[in-house]
Amino acid sequence: MDTLDAIILGIIQGLTEFLPVSSSGHLELGKAILGDNSIPEESLLFTVVLHFATALSTIVVFRKDVWEILAGLFKFKWNEETQFSLKIIVSMLPATFVGLFFEEKLEAFFGGDIQFVGFMLLITAVLLYFADKAKDTNKKVNFPKAFIVGLSQAVAMLPGISRSGATIATSVLLGVDKTKAARFSFLMVVPLIFGKMAKDVMSGELNFQSENIMAMGVGFVAAFVAGLAACTWMIQLVRNSKLTYFAIYCLIVGLLAIGYSFWG
Image (cartoon, rainbow, N blue to C red; front, top):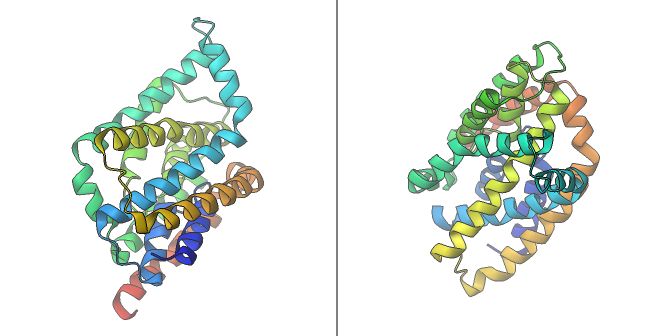
């Protein structure tokens, strides 16, 4: 992977992380179109690096929320911040289980199979469409709903299933307010990404090959900068716009990906 390709993929990751259109799916499509021939393990590693960059951009954008949560935790009381943090932990359980016990099988899906990505984007489109038909409420995410949303996040580890789309749609279908659903969706993934990075460092999986360090670095910077811009500019769009727009987009891209797999 050369530097220009890494920058392009970094920008794709940064722009699509905060929209319910599957950043991992777009990365796989980008790799296929750009002719990236990385083996699944290397491809997944680059994907993790870009997700790490957007996790940092999430923390920067939600710094006030993160600070309030941390400040509330250190009060050592059963307050709203403590409950929110525990809900985040509950939501992490399904994805953590999948990551620990099915990681090798999961890696195989990151090998540029754009037909599979296309079908997963169609599933994302269906989820978003039905979520758009749900009634608006003022309800918050409770513990049972946090676990169910966590199940959606685990399924969304597959490329083409939008993590934000699946978790927001699930929350909304469970009766959660769209704004609260979006906030929970964006914050719940941060601990998982940092946990994944820590696990890889401890296991030695992040021993980058020297020729890939430059590509990894510029991809990281591109994803971080694009993530800051996208999260700042588009967060309100994700929270307040009709999800049908994104459903149509995923439908079109999914069909194009399936078509490209046959005739590309």
